[in-house]
Length: 51
Image 1 (cartoon, rainbow, N blue to C red):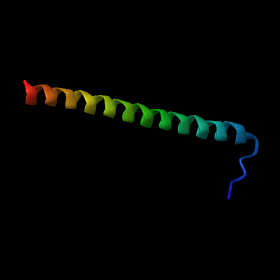
Image 2 (image 1 turned 90 degrees about the vertical axis):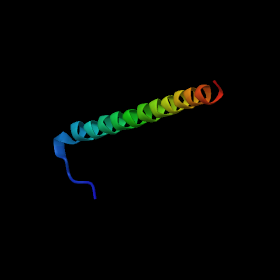
Image 3 (image 1 turned 45 degrees about the horizontal axis):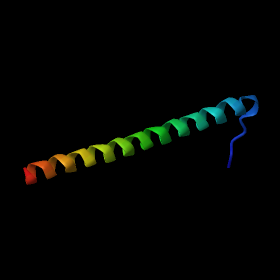
Image 4 (image 1 turned 180 degrees about the horizontal axis):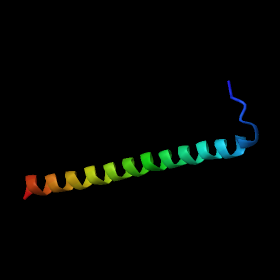
């Protein structure tokens, strides 16, 4: 299933690896920011509801 990459195998595979790491990092940062924003929104809503 893996195509023959010849002498470029290292470069191609490392490029795929770096790309996957960057995508995973973007997903992680997005989830982290989403949770932080949701928490801040809940705090503001509580202040408005109680204040």
